[in-house]
Length: 287
Image 1 (tube, rainbow, N blue to C red):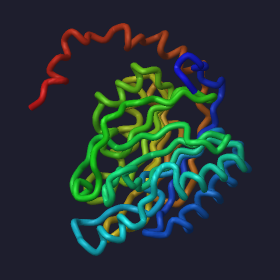
Image 2 (cartoon, rainbow, N blue to C red; image 1 turned 90 degrees about the horizontal axis):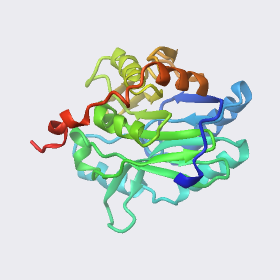
Image 3 (spheres, helix red, strand yellow; image 1 turned 120 degrees about the vertical axis):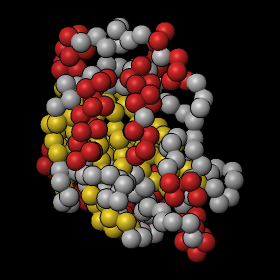
Image 4 (cartoon, one colour; image 1 turned 90 degrees about the vertical axis):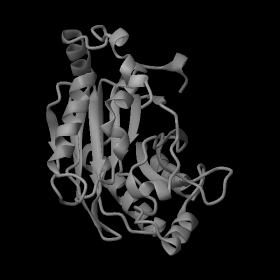
């Protein structure tokens, strides 16, 4: 959907965040899980949007390792490709929007990867791609950073997508808000060694509160190359109140996002009018 075709957020948007384990190097198994979760989300809550974690296609990376790197590159997929085509079939079948992380092969350069998220619309088409722009730790050996800050205008609202470390930078999520985002979707593979589980609930709340939009965090569970992932997915409203939370179990979180609340809270606290960008020059100075 083009900017000139932008429609207001749907009056009520039912979101499902699927907190799941991911099978390393087994795209078929992960797609099977995704389809079953979408089916369940439609049957239980008639979801408009179903969200899956970061790197759902073939799983997370490990420390620098030639053999693993070879296998990981071999498992990557282009956009469009096998993974997005399969997601498109699922989206068409169940008449739903899907956002999922994936390991993306660079369109031109062999053995070069993006950590990406795709937005698939109910027609089965790729309606948006976000490629991770902040690359932490071991990921630097596997992924190159992108440089886009797009938001995606859909029939259910304008969506911004952040992938894991991206969401620790308030500058990025505020940029999405200034471009019209009404829903922030945050995909995670946040491991236990790096943070305490409760931080994900607090961060989801904060991102929603400071921008007066809805924030959806979807983290994975399980183990990957010796790293454990702690879940704690969450959905927050424009007041920063958590309206759905998980702990470390395999589950689907549901929440209804209401346009009227977003409008009411932005009218009550006009954070965009009250910004002072003339004072924030330090934010864009390189170190």
